[in-house]
Length: 283
Image (cartoon, rainbow, N blue to C red; front, side, top):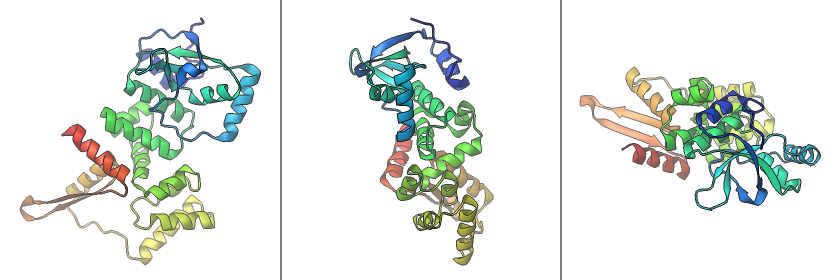
């Protein structure tokens, strides 16, 4: 077995994570059928053409960079992928029976961290998959936006804008996942009651992000939807903080004598489930 050179091809983030595991990072080989997908994998969509290119490369040169796996908790002798699912799929397509791996002893949190860092560094995730990965770290492992920003190497505003995409209607989220509109287009639609209708206009007319922003601005002015803040600035800050934290619209109605209502607006069952889980996990 060859000692795995951490800094080759994995990026600084993954190298740091590997160093944190205190595991021996030696390359070994496993039967392909002893390896299975990562149930925490944030990436759901694999580009068919890119996968074919990788398959052809593996047929000619083999798997140059090993995948990272951990022992499966439920099946003896089986292993779960932490990073490298695309290489594993391409190796199967190439007809390989074995694949080089690095076996690590890590928990669910570290496994999800690996998967997100690898995909973000290589820009393999679409913007919705990326946001869902961040939300999972928040919901299941008590991350906040500041910790996420430091860990991923992005600004806090980048993380916040990414998470806001999850508040869009499910149909608009599918538009982003299917690359009918970009994340830039989608951000201009966050919070709009007619987001799907505008998304359809964007695709039908092939509007740029700037053109989409101008359309949204014009529609807001035309329909007098421009909101003039009338609430106390502290209440507005609290609302924004909650929206950033949980990714759905929140309204605080504070009346005289400081009684009122806290309203969470969800657009689908996934958002409702996420809100319920946040409450259950923290209270």
